[in-house]
Amino acid sequence: MNKKYIEWAILFVLSAMLLLSGVWFYSEYKYKGDVRGKYTFAHTKAKINYLGNIKIVSPESGEMNIYRLDDGGWRFKEAKEYYINEERLSAFFDMVKNSIIVSVQRTDADFMEKNDLNTEKGILVATYDYDGNLLDEIILGKQSPEQGLFWARKANDENYAYVINSITGFSAVAPDWLPYPLLSIKTDEIKWVSINGDKTDYKEFNKLLANSSAWRDLAGILSYLDYYGLDFKSEFIDLPEDTRVRQIDVGMLNGMIYKLTVLDIGNTYWVVISMDAKKIFMIDAMKVAAETYRYYADWVFRLSDEQGEKLFSDNLFY
Image (cartoon, rainbow, N blue to C red; front, side, top):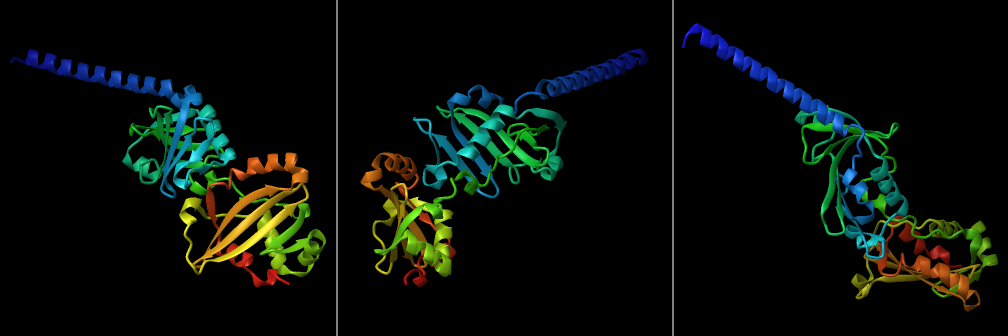
């Protein structure tokens, strides 16, 4: 091969390389231009009325599956099919409807590690339609809470990371998705309290609140009853012989009656809640009771040791 052909060959290779780099640059530029300003959960947003399952996987809480029932209600699969915190669900829908990609950046393994965009540190959010088809699968990384911004990437794309906005109220922590508190009984609406059959009317109840720290603790628990876990009632049919039981019934001015069966099973405390209503108040009270009781019907709730010990306090008898 003579010198002239060698020069032409080199020129051809250089030209081809220049052309390819130009195509690559244009493709990357076009890619960035195409996604900037687009919705992060575009497929979910387009089929929002057909959203059937939300899967969230985080280092803190593991895998959570929030799924929709045929009647439109939502349940928490890993939390014994319990109800969902409606405010948390609303925040998720706001994220789907409003979260937009505001900037794009090429990334690598170091960048993903630094910004929590790998599967070990990131929060994976996957959405599915009624038929189980995947809609979007996004990994959320580090955030700027003040600005409502997150680093994110598509789970199947390790080449690009996005800055996305409008993620306020989203949480990957399991307890945040559960309704709280379990009870919220206002002290000034209590008509009477019965503990193991010993009943006090509201006058005596108010005197006890003024003079007994144990009764003030009881009122505080009734006004904000927390829970740290739950299980199906069917798991509590055969209780150990040494189980301690305390029955606390609370009658309300509007006729509703809350019935708390508190269990001490091997120094772990649980509560079963049921509701009733006086016939004289049947119409109004039963409507409220029916709406509220669905949160208690099938489950037993785990109390903190502190709450359990206070509910079993001997100082509640006088």
